[in-house]
Image 1 (cartoon, protein in one colour):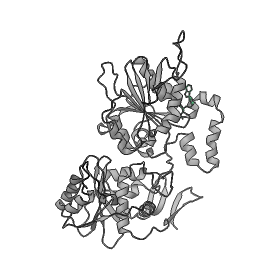
Image 2: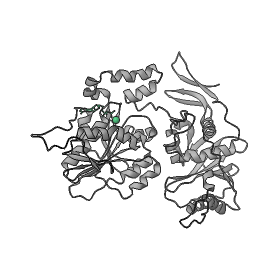
Image 3: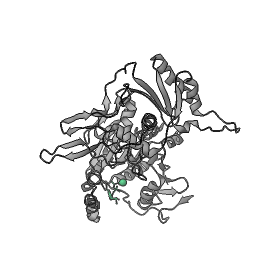
Image 4: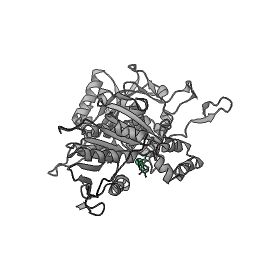
Length: 480
Ligand SMILES: Nc1ncnc2c1ncn2[C@@H]1O[C@H](COP(=O)(O)OP(=O)(O)O)[C@@H](O)[C@H]1O
Ligand SMILES: [Mg+2]
């Protein structure tokens, strides 16, 4: 049902200005020739305004255009963009349809407002196409969602100027790590550089935004910056740096804050034959499946994750078969396979017939090789054990880390998805002792089942303490 945004009057005489870009980053982002842009940084930098301005302008410039604006949840869309668009765009330009969440322009263009809450929600966009895609608060999305949805930016329209994927974001949130890696670490501010082919090969640009780049806000809400400063007073300096300064080097809320690539990632080697070996499995077809092989020198509690099979779209039978094949080919003796306990549940088909459980395929493939056991899915204890397994003792300075006691759990370079996703997990908003499941947590999950299967005792308190050496200013980590 279409709803009128503002009184249905005809177009006013003369012209009416709907949006105008402020000089600086907003104007640069409007005029950019890059195909994939992150306008990122401080809260209040005019990021969301830029996205709406770009999309409305595009719709008016190209009759028949179809553009989409994503946020992770519908509530966030409603609270920000929909209500703002209803104020900014008069109904003689475009009419909002409440039922289909879209603005229909009088020239035939459409601006769709969409959300993508769960990882697997991306599949509902399989037949979708848009001329321009925009993501607001990009760090709320997972890398998988962004990569998958971006493939829907395509068009066969003769006037199409080409791919355009626009994002706006503060630092922080579940996507902080991948967004930082993709944009901030990849290009200098304002530089335009082609991204790797495996990431779509887009011309990529990062445009930093500060509150001071939005003089309109500074003029009408001068206390806004002060309200952000209150975060420091409340002891959240990191949050202040992220929100007010748009500082991507602070990462608020990282769950495994002791993760250091130079400590946890080791070059690949073939574990000696007498090491004990284990396989851990987090099932997935729509979402990525995650399978890891871990080896442990006998008599120790040190674990090296040495092999990985990861990604969506592989049938359950194939997942188990591929895992057995590589294990048998390498002539490895496995202690056990530990799986997500949900893999033992049985669904029903359309005729009410009970289907085989996912675990049964693993039991079949590994019959005669080793047992297949149910993982323990107590989340908070699992998270505590995982954190303890990543903990280490040593001295960390600007010039490097000297490790005295290595972590229990280390990752060989042959496991890029575990190395990519585990450090990016953040605390759950609902329970700070748990990991936020909106992040890409599949590798974490299977290795959590693994750790629970070998470390039975509840986790001890963290074995280390961080102190700052007042004389040298060095951060020193000591055994507690
Ligand atoms: N070019 C502009 N013209 C007028 N108002 C603007 C402009 N850019 C931003 N604003 C206003 O400044 C405020 C903050 O902008 P917003 O885009 O919501 O910031 P961010 O998304 O970066 O936090 C909003 O009220 C917005 O309408
Ligand atoms: Mg915003």
